[in-house]
Image (cartoon, rainbow, N blue to C red; front, side):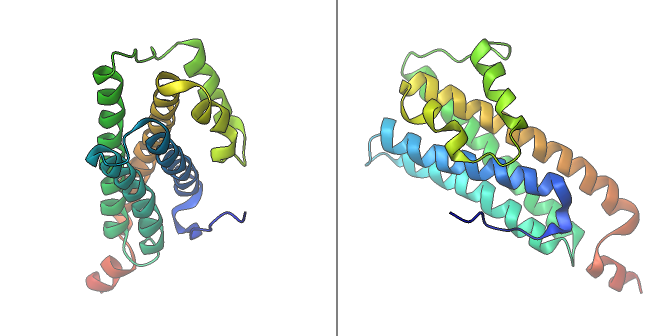
Length: 176
């Protein structure tokens, strides 16, 4: 399957964040199908939060060529969507009496180590999501969301730093 391309304006961090967001989205769809009642509103909300995060990264990258302000706004929306999704996974674990892994747990460290795989995709994490039960799956996706949020936070910092002196095409035209 071909990987979707996003414009290069946002640079490496935008691409890396998009790649992680796609994995989070695919894992959330799989989690919803495996662990959450199909009629549940929570399932729909989780999938939509993951989708919103992914889509806003792509839209922000697209907008970067003309307006840095819009790019920054959309990256902020993506970050908020992933924060909402993070809380949904934490709630799901708590409501089902399952434990949330500590930041330095061996499985968390293993999950973080997979980020060194350059061409990673949902397939990289499939065994952790499809076959290991609700607790393992939710915690694996939590790790992925934290990794995505880290990338988005770094992207936001860079965009904010770049926006202040330069602005984007629209902002420069306005000054002219």
